[in-house]
Image (cartoon, rainbow, N blue to C red; front, side):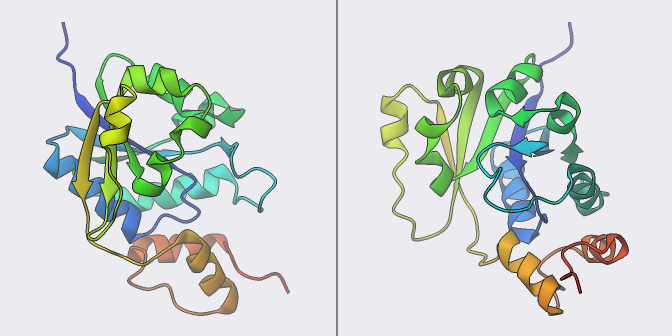
Length: 197
């Protein structure tokens, strides 16, 4: 019988992926001694549909693939894209059953778990890993009272966001050092985020 792996699941739109995502994934993997972290690219992120234009999933996946290439223990995952339709974490965790799963979320997301589709399924299938920055006032003890298994991982404070990166590219400003070099090159190659003339 194969040994169960300890697998972190960091889902996101990754539009684009940036150093904040990668630092969080790396810190969680090391601190919790996980075998791997899957960076799961959302196919159709239901909470963002209709709010803004989302870059095609194939492009976002390509950015994640080049970002993690060569980094031990970090893997790009197309699971949600291949499944098709709206992206629900409960379905993703069900597809990964058989491993010990650790769902990685930010403190801001952890406070909104009751807005998710089927949060009880998520709670049953995974340990929640809340990544937090120094000085945060988030208290995960309320989640344990609701039956969640919770780990907290402190990460360095990095003020970078995908929305700012998209705006920088559209304005012709550099994104160097905010995303890995291969991601910068892939964005340029694919002509992503540039303002249409």
